[in-house]
Image (cartoon, rainbow, N blue to C red; front, side, top):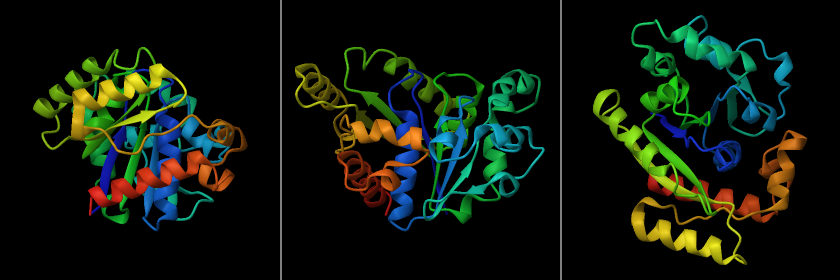
Length: 254
């Protein structure tokens, strides 16, 4: 049975989409069957895997509306073992459209029941907010990965996200676990980066992934070519970091 993992943080620019795309690709290369769900109206995970967002006709929007089944909105990518359910700017409207629906928090969970067993991992790239889209992702997920950038405001907002997760555990999804906190954008030359790493590891101990994602130019370039770091430059530090994270995740879940 596949494990559903949401990648969430309401702060923007922390490496959610970078992590979603590159972790999914790394798991695929390691021969795990992976589905990536783009649950962000900005659709960066979709374009980051080489799909033209303007030509997307069905995706996460129809999945949440229950007008299409998961299999009907899934697209194969050029990365081995990796499928995607794409996003589109239309997804912005879903929060308003679902507001009157009964059990609106469970739309994604219900939609994924048919395909959960078809994959080893289902990753959900969440929007940078704690709105209905992210709530749906966390209600559908078995666990959540929280990317935290190694910068000054890193821990700001983390308390709010952890409180949201606690309330979802109480009300909507008692089985939701924290898969781990992932330190991103680490620069070993900066004292501040090292301080953030120490602080997070001191406060959260075993909740923090051992793998740390370092700042890497190739990692920043890859999305503009519509490729994961694995396809773009498999020998780069970024590729090495995400393969290491994928291996850590596989061991943790074996």
